[in-house]
Length: 214
Image (cartoon, rainbow, N blue to C red; front, side, top):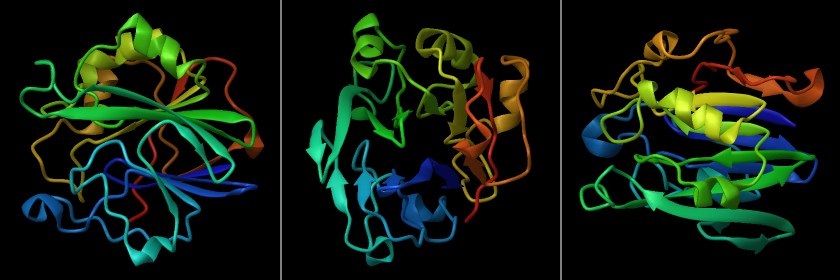
């Protein structure tokens, strides 16, 4: 399986059965704050954590995928969906978001969407064991870098990939990914946009910063 970070909170996972695109953004969304180039890939599934324009843009550039925004079996793949809060005020400021998890090529991936609150034991149990975790770290609208240690401890993934931070293609006044360095040790930054399971999953938890491809 190969993971590609396209930008903002969007990744794709390519496996033997097809491609899953997670939280695709709309180029120019939020008054132009999202300027990553459009994602162009033939997807079989697209997961959507919530219907903000920077997480839910399913265009013809993605082909004719199945859209997944809830739990269930879709086109032969089982998806777990757990609704949580986009903020620390029970959703009264930013609304709700979802965490979606699925297994591809024997690897369980969980995308936490725009979670803005601490995980509960019920959240952790609902997601189940996680091999690859995709988590927001920019703060302001989601959890921030200071929340990362507790999040990683709760889910204990073998590989964790931060997203939703300030970058050349996202100008929302978020923390840059470098802010994680003060809170998480041993971060790897290989300078690539992709990760392949051909090299094997880490035996211990590893945080990997991928560069936006778009």
